[in-house]
Image 1 (cartoon, rainbow, N blue to C red):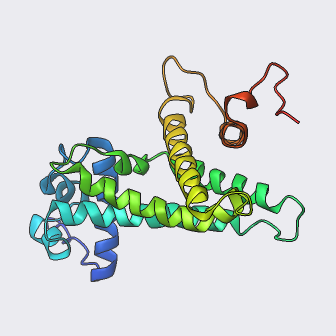
Image 2: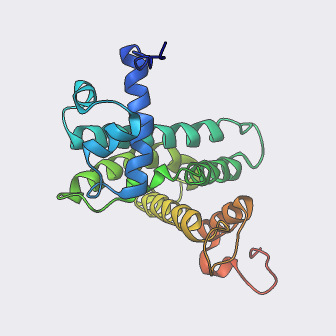
Length: 219
């Protein structure tokens, strides 16, 4: 008597949506928005395209669902890391800044490379993604700036302006580290995560003068 193949397990709707999101993250991170089709995602998830369309109206809808999820993941990593600091510590502000940077680097350290979605410029209208990321950075600045800069010295607008630049720099350095300095690039050296975080914090605090020959920050 021949054996019959059991039909695929029918997942509850929420579980199926979570599975599709998880699979789509990998596909978009590997191929980019322009090079990914709904067929690609459905095939990788081992579902029919109609099943995929039950959860997402089109590729754009799916992609921005992923973007919103990744920004929320990044936000959670940063805020969770910052909350580990004792607010009564004499160096609380410096520790909070360090933990915020560490949270960004942990996000880009994910070996599946999902952070690449935030950098994807292959859409027909990349401004839409840039605006979504920009809105996130503005929210982050509002939350982090009181810890980074002394508002008794700078007015609020100046503080936010500088913190916005810091946020962009940290995100840029974290993604460059993940792409080129994590031991997977053929010509670039491996820089451990903790070292990369320390370098980034020093650069944020002191600029280029923080890297003098003695390897110590200025007094």
